[in-house]
Image (cartoon, rainbow, N blue to C red; front, side, top):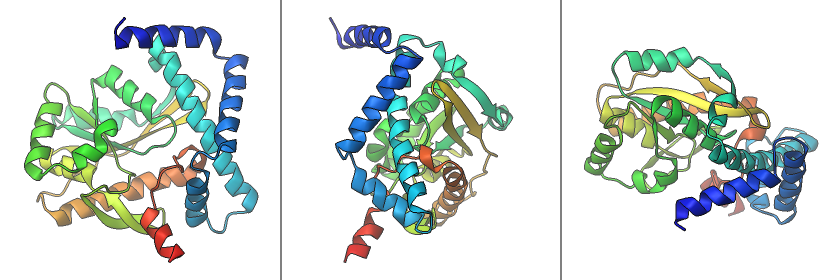
Length: 276
């Protein structure tokens, strides 16, 4: 039995045991409790929340932390569900805001770099864009792609955008190598410039998009206004566009902080500096 067949059998069995409804609710509660009690990145999450929301009441910070773990668990359960039934990718999208912005950008004949954050169900967003627009996604290879030289990035984009019009890229990550210090969630912090460099290299429009959870197995997708990249492909232009992207994404995170991935080492250099 090959790997794909193993996955197919696993998801069929999984979805027979854990179905949408009370079984999924019980499973989500159990797994989220287990993740919290085993301390999976609890310290990182708490430090991040304290850094960004120092004046919020203690109970509210705990609520954001708890719900962020709930969000992670529902991501896994929903992923298993649509692997077994791809039709869920359409029925789960119950609210799509400003889709016309993406459609207008594509109608212009330009390629589109869709920039998102790791909030809500970002894996669902990737799968939905692929199903409805044939989009590609760089999320799982972000660190590798970020290390590409300008020539290597151009070659990657040429291949990735051949026969497709959209590439989904994460805009809220800490820089692995090629990055810059910009303002993000009120902090001057190392930030990836990959979305901006992709847009500049491909002369593509930038369209912000995030996916948040309205309820289990119910997703809200929200697009933003298309951004025209600067004409010159320079480090200064990449910095300018990166800052614009961060400002757009942080608005969305502040509105629904429970759905962002606080478990990432996003502000590592700032927290280390505080410790010293």
